Image (cartoon, rainbow, N blue to C red; front, side):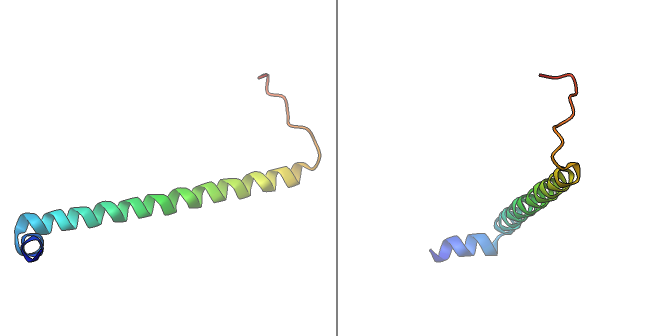
Amino acid sequence: MGSAWNGLLGTDYGLFSLIGSIVMLGIGVFFIWFFNRKIQQSSDEHARELRKAGSKPPASNGHA
């Protein structure tokens, strides 16, 4: 176990691997946060539009 940690933290390729993994995890967390925020904003905007329209049926745009 000690040699694995020495390889990860004690060599240049180990450090690059660790940094790359941390960056990829950070990007993943950022994208999850970003997309959830955009989805929530879109949902709020849609709900606002529905309240503003009242009980009017949706406008026909020529599609079935």
